[in-house]
Length: 453
Image (cartoon, rainbow, N blue to C red; front, side, top):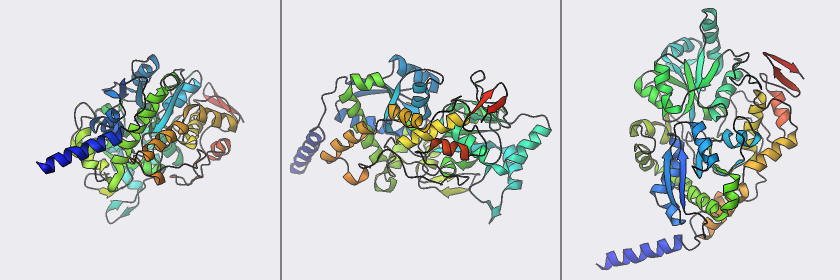
């Protein structure tokens, strides 16, 4: 009895300590949206482990049919916030598609996507891929896909690929990989938002959970999506993931948590509180060298969250990734939720996505470097993030060394891309002009032609 009583006292002390800095939240009942992907994990963990409640928040999590519905419901206020594609707050703020000022104080993860092709395409690609000990040499570049696409075209067959949304990380990663292999993924214009002008590979939108079935039906020949939908293709034997986004751009930013600017201004303490809870969830997901990942997998496998088999989710959440069936390789950073400052909303991450919007014509006119910085700073809110982090450190719930206190919001230039090109977020136009395929300074798309520059 004494042991149980002492345990209760210690638990009570721990709980009161966790609540010692509880903010006076302006709105305590919240509804957040998400898409059924493993990288919604910080939301599920913050709810299931009581981190939202520790902050005085009572949160309902609700899966959404697709990214457009999710964004629209945040804009109308039906959702208070949501798991979003990194490009969504940026595109909405600059008025590509829906116009609304969406912001983010929290980046949800790094990496986590893959590109999968059908079995037919894979067999043709393998003829152009170096082998070592009977296995393909990775990373697999799109050069190996180019002769396959050329063969399709000579037979009068379109080469169709799926991605999840026009301003998705998946669209830009897929385009980057294709272009690095000298395959044109197509332009957008003000009058043609298909993104297929001059395209050699025709990219179109398919919701993430429908990717495997669409591939199996033969409607698409490949796709770029987040997990578990690449590993699902392996388990079903209908396709082969050929590359991860970690290999396209090492430690690339993936999803963000999006809110309207109005919400953050009307409910500043609520915004801080939810950011604190999400940071704690991210820490838990990565701590002790991913020791909690199997517990996370069991939570995500529930039908109210991702709803895929735990075995499929675990294939990429526990430090491995399976390419061709049986070819499972160690990829310890395939899913990163906290290390490498994953949750800090870097301006340079926002600028990269803006450069890709410009590269492919979603931003139709040339913008100067200052515009990229101003746009990034109007959407990404590292000040709120660091304020939340400071509170967690003071409460003993986070380590001071785990946050980039001195950052100016820009990562150092990096060349860790599939094509070895260097990206410097402070020089967006120089970066755009350095890429072989895509719009350059002064160029626009008119009809089916690139003009100017």
